Each structure stands twice: as C-alpha cells, then as structure tokens.
Length: 377
Image (tube, rainbow, N blue to C red; front, side, top):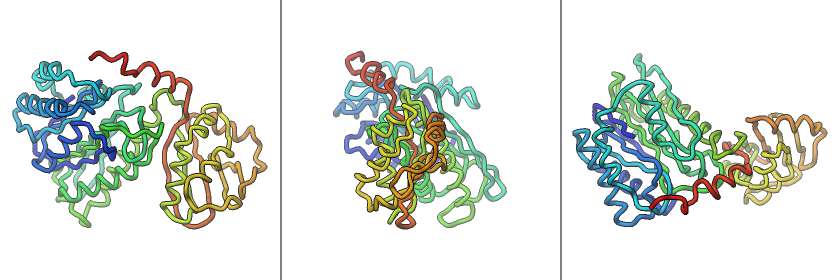
C-alpha cells in the first residue's frame, strides 16, 4: 500500500514503546528527522522485525523502490510493516510490484478502501474514518485508515494508523496534537496485554486546505486537536471491536481515585485481567473478579469504599454485593457493548480504557492460524 501527497507534508509519528523495534520503525524514526515526507509505503504479512542488519537493508530497499516509482527522494518515504515476526522480508516480491502499485494510485472511496484492506493481517474487516471541521472559515478534512486486531495493549498496540489531512499546521503543533490524540485513543485500548514491535501512528498534513497556519496556542488549534482525537478514538474502538475473535467491546471507567495515576493502574488491571475477560465472554457479571483486579492493581484503595456498576446498574456497593437483580446485570454483559464503572470514592482521579472479552476462538486462532510453523520462509 502506498499513500502519496502531491505536496511535502508536515508529518508527526508515534511509535511502539517496545524495546524490540522492527526495522521499518527505526528507519521511519530516522527519516522523520531528516526530511519532510511525501509518502508512506506499508506491507502486511511480514513485520520485518528481529531480522538484524538485513532487515534494515530491506526497509531501505522498500523506501528506495517506492521513491523511484513515485519520483521522490528515498528519505521522503516512510516505511511500515506488519505481520509475522522473525522471518526475513521477501523484499524481491515487493520490489517487483512497486512500479505497478505506484501506477495504480487513485483518489476517493475506492482507493481508500483498497489501501485499508491492503494493510490487514488478522483483521476481519478494513477500518477507515473521516472527519471535516471548520478552521478559520476553511473546511479541513482528516481521514484515517488503520489495522489491528491482536497483540493490542496500551502504549500503542500491534497496529498501524495513517492519518492524512489538508490542514496547514506547524510541525511543533502537529507533533503535540498527535501525541495528545494518541494518548487519548490508541494508548487507551487493550485486547490481550501484549505490545508489538511495529506499532506506528503517522499523521501527514500537506497544508492545502487554505486555512491560516495552526500554531501552538493559536486560532484553530483546539478545533484541530479535538477533531484528530475524535478520529483516532473512533479508529481505536474499531480495532478493539475487531479483536481476534472477541465478542464484546467494553469500556472500563475508573473514577474517584486518589490520583489519575491510581485510576490508570486500576483501569489497566481490570482491562487486562484474563479472569475478568473470560467472565464477560460467558455473559457473567462477576464483579468479584473485577474487585480482585482492583485490589492487586497497586493503586491506593479501601475495599469498603469501592462501588462497581455495569452500564449504570450497581453490582457492588461499598465492596459488598448490591440488591440489583442478577438477571438485570446479566442482560447488560450479554450485549456486544457495555461499560464497567469502578468508583473508588477516594478522590478526583479518573481514567478510561477500551478492552474486550477473551473467547475460546481467540485462543484457537492464536495457537493455530498465526503460528510461525505455518509461515513460508
């Protein structure tokens, strides 16, 4: 897949926090410091991770081949890969197809759909969104495609997200807006608690909307940040909802914590608890599993102060079972989407995170369908 801007684009990137980083991540981080990008090239099926010096050579060859086909400089091409880890990239196959790919570039819904489909791995459906917002009397468009379905955990996930916008915005403000939007979206999702080697969010702004340049604290800055954050939130929820054979999208909300840091600890503990996720898959409103995760989260809590709600229906009050009929709670967790709210009643700290259940099909998929033993070398 190739994304091409006809104009140099201010570009911001957020990458995996995993200490083991794929070659394309390292290369793109370098190129972002050296040039103003005009293109992104991405492949699925092979992550080009843990492939040593040959992996870096293959990533550079991807950029070089794309640059030649597009008529731009190599450092103007950012490279992304996703797929199996540890196997060499079949770079010759990519190089052979690049001229054809560059020649088939198009605009509009059809081209967007093809690009979103091209980056899928274990996804069951392509993911894309678009938002328009008025900034300084001009219409600014933001569009995104993304992939991700497993190995999803806060601090980025096994995911790629590419955002393009015609907004005119300074590099510093775009970087700040991208970091803020990522923290409020992709860094607040988890499916299985695993963090990938290839996670990348790239936001390209080519300045063709005609708006007055957005700068830090200047007019239009807040509107752009809100639009970018909303776009990324929509994409983040699509990723969780498409988790590898999961059946439920669950928002975990923690409030009343002693601090925001404590609220985050509780939210992540509950969202990543395998026991909690299994109970959701069984349509079981097992608040006991929720409070046990609260207890080991490392946050300051008082058991007798904890309240737990499923879609606003009280399951536990002051650490004890409530009088809400069990059947009512079961109806909530039997649905495809619901919210678990945990009130610690200790302060004003708040945090939310999106997660999913854990299904037998998820285990089956990850033990068989994506096994390295089945991959061609």
